Image 1 (cartoon, rainbow, N blue to C red):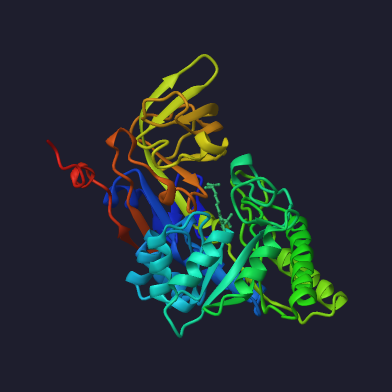
Image 2 (tube, protein in one colour):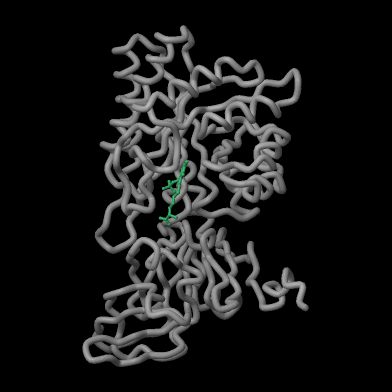
Length: 425
Ligand code: LLP
């Protein structure tokens, strides 16, 4: 994160707190979140798009502290399950600033969202529109957005591309489903159609796909005006803003994203004679990802023919992304001075699978040994939230650093926690 400092003697601090102290106090593996940096990212989003509603995508990283930070920074919250909604509710997150997502919301989740009074529900199927309309209490109107497929292919990996045809999210413009959804929603007196939504995919690092989506979506708003005579006030362009993971990589530049998307929306609206819709954006990774790192302790070092295998006390249970998406990370030894030259190394986990790799082809000091500490950067998004308990491994704690202090916000999961749900014989 911006608050991480390394020195030549192996010193490493986050927000002024030595990582060695954090490892001693909270154990390893541990997720460390630079709260100051994370809050600065929230503010940068609001400053870059002052007229837009910035809605943080909770799936990237959520705990009760995080929900509070997001609330305090004035962002909305995108939730995609009843569980995420429950976390938001537990810290009194203002319901009207919550956007509820999902391609297969259960009747219970929809009921919970309506009951909580969430600001917007993003409908994803035709059947959902009728179901939702039927459960809204008499005399109330639920705001909805319709998720459409803009037919734009973008995103870092097949598994996280959602803007093209023939995938499970949203309704196709080409097939007529999106137009049918608009007609149906307008016909329901218990629903208020606030606007349209799309989400292209994740880890997108250039503004062009978003610009294209903005044009396609404003065009859809114009179609709706032409067909139904209504002007929808909102346009939600989803998230997907990419971040750097490796040294020298670049993420999506927020300033140019903001300028180009804003320009595209304004130009297209002017061209089609529409008022400029209120923008909603849903960044997840770009808010929490760079603010996090993971601390591991080296358990074994194996010297292969051409490389060393450095096995640590975590692995695919706290970071499944290399296995799922071929994601790549850097790793750095911290905590002591090493005069040794570096060698090609692979950082592996402690799980019973050969694919259990955390960082491939990294340079680590040749004298790295058990007990050393390793820090992996940019782990604040889709790590804690996607962690599993494979091999009955408890999930790592989350340690937040702010004002020169480290504090626990999620404690480590212990074997006893893991057995809580197991009712036995
Ligand atoms: N809005 C919607 C409707 C989404 O589906 C997502 C992510 C976001 C916003 C936030 O996207 P972001 O800004 O974080 O890219 N587990 C994968 C990423 C899956 C993203 C799913 N949807 C990974 O670790 O790369």
